[in-house]
Image (tube, rainbow, N blue to C red):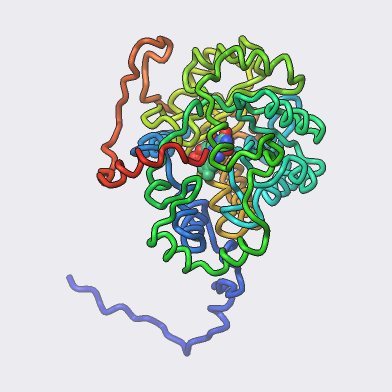
Length: 448
Ligand SMILES: Cc1cc2nc3c(=O)[nH]c(=O)nc-3n(C[C@H](O)[C@H](O)[C@H](O)COP(=O)(O)O)c2cc1C
């Protein structure tokens, strides 16, 4: 049986009714405010920064397998929420090495930060203090130990140390970090030799730079970046300006990679440095245990963002085993692939005290200087807190393994001589043959 045609009662259009329910996007929102995720900031960074500089940040070692694994591991996490738990008045803060930080996040050390944007390390340190989390300055930073302290007079500053073969250089760095009130030395141990980052070799971003015509042409499309670069002082390894003998930048860079770095070096550092000492760059339970047995106060589960030994495991895949090995009292941080607040939530639930972010804040920095770094933290903090509440957790400290389902794609991590069987791997893009050739030639001059 057919229905009668639908009768629709109509009126003349009344725009006032539309106005009540539709808010138009404010046209004056800045590009940063319009970025809704760190991935948006990355897109913006790509559009505002010369390709060679963007690639220096975005790229990783060899076939970039580990860098991709780091990110992919977080996507295998499933959250298991608890319902009917009050999550009013959420508290994202956590304790870390005797202090309380605003959320389980801190800024990883990155070299040459003023190359990404002229605001550089000082801006990142300023944001870190503003939001209440630590900032780690790199040995090869482009702002000195003292200038970063000036930018962050009350912040919790850590100093990332590349132990060089020259004890005088090491002592100079340590005593200056001590005098400037840095609380923690972050000893990086995954740089015995330089990783091979092929994008940098192709772009000619080595020390000294061997820029190709293509790179120079591309750079000319970013006059604002150039203007800022040329009017804000040259790029130096600012904390290493006093290295005796006036070595060339290439010689200084090569000092940062010490193939002789061993456990005795850690012992000597432990005797010398009375503050917190954290070892950055462990990826196995055995190495993590060894670091703590030698007196380190904590470890960072890190593969240097996939920039050193490619085909290392994703850091999230090894985190649960390392936490199990070290027990609940040890300080365990993680970095690599953290691009979303939910990644921080997952890392915390799987045993990390806090995460370090590297590229996430550098994308923000490239996209908009200091305000871009702040935008990165705003986005991550919003995602983190919202997801924590939806998970039924009021305090960061209440997050635990029962809130996630996650199956590390590795087994037999306990045995050092066994091989790590990897599942869920993927075939990387084919690296062009000419890239490989150039890589061999450029090995000596890699940026740390
Ligand atoms: C551009 C860049 C420079 C870096 N420089 C350093 C450095 O000087 N010292 C260091 O210990 N780690 C350095 N790292 C590694 C970071 O501290 C951190 O381990 C890594 O970025 C974490 O991975 P993510 O970028 O995926 O967050 C650098 C990373 C990047 C992206």
